[in-house]
Image 1 (cartoon, rainbow, N blue to C red):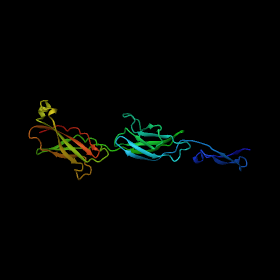
Image 2: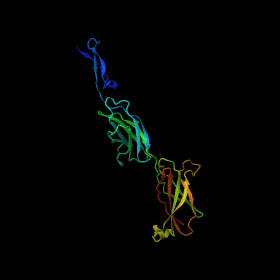
Image 3: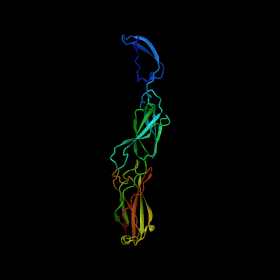
Length: 270
């Protein structure tokens, strides 16, 4: 007597438990017996579910997810975590490549902290469940780190001199750090007694005699005609009655903090 029974390999709910199967005659095709057995077929797990950003800081993010709907026949041991490097080696022509942060987490708790990141940057992560067969299908999603201080504004310049005052102009920073620029702070460096002649010939006052003066702030919406002005300006003064060298520096501010100071303007003498 020869019989056969078909066991579905992809219906994992029938595995790892005793199940009754009908045995059919291979010639006549009718059932000739019943067989009770337990079988176990394993493959890599299904994809993780519902990945999300749980917490975002300047240099790290915490991500969470739900386990796969099916472990495909073998218990989950942990999770593989990787992220996409847009430029693995600066200066090379290599395209983006995946970098594995962890081959298999020590815990099956579906949470992971990715550290040593850059602020105000979007990253692509890939999470895959791991069982004894190996990592399953990956689940890609994007996360962003928290905003940071803006970049420094451009090097300022003296746009106009009139009535004992100077009009200082500058351009906004290349990056606002992920938050709108709120204001610009103007700093003035002055060397009383400095002139074009004596500073050029090294006979004037030195850096130790320089003084810095905070000249106040200018709101980022100073130009009502333009929603996002390409050039800002502000009048500063009054100036010293005697000869003096002036240089200016601009600092951008957002809710995360203030930028580094811009490059100093060229010298202006009065």
